[in-house]
Image 1: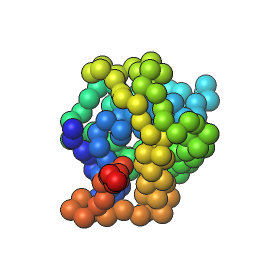
Image 2 (image 1 turned 45 degrees about the vertical axis):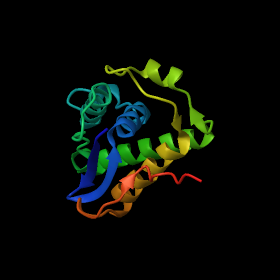
Image 3 (image 1 turned 135 degrees about the vertical axis):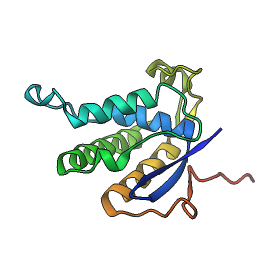
Image 4 (image 1 turned 90 degrees about the vertical axis):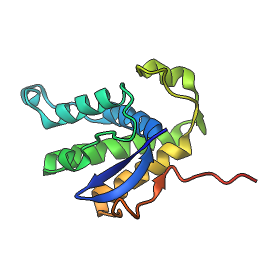
Length: 153
């Protein structure tokens, strides 16, 4: 399984592709709808459509998140941050393990997702918050991998 670098202006973190695709699918579903008068050409809809496509088709080692582009203006930043916070809130209320059955109803072309520990999605959410809100990240050569490897006893 591959991994992709999620960044804004070259600073970011590495994420395993499968879980990144699931995170993006869920995040896209948490972005607010633009008003009817703003729908045509809405950057929010462009971002959501891009993340839904990315999360449907498996990209091995090159998931094109384009996070910097999504948050380049105040409105995009506000909507993406609200979506991240909304998803994190929902994940905190979720069971410790999300079952593959309902996850695979979300649509994925290549066989879908496995059961996933909610804590791993929360870890990615916190990294997105750190990067977008506080600019916390490293360059690709020294950035951490998410989710963090679990230790076996």
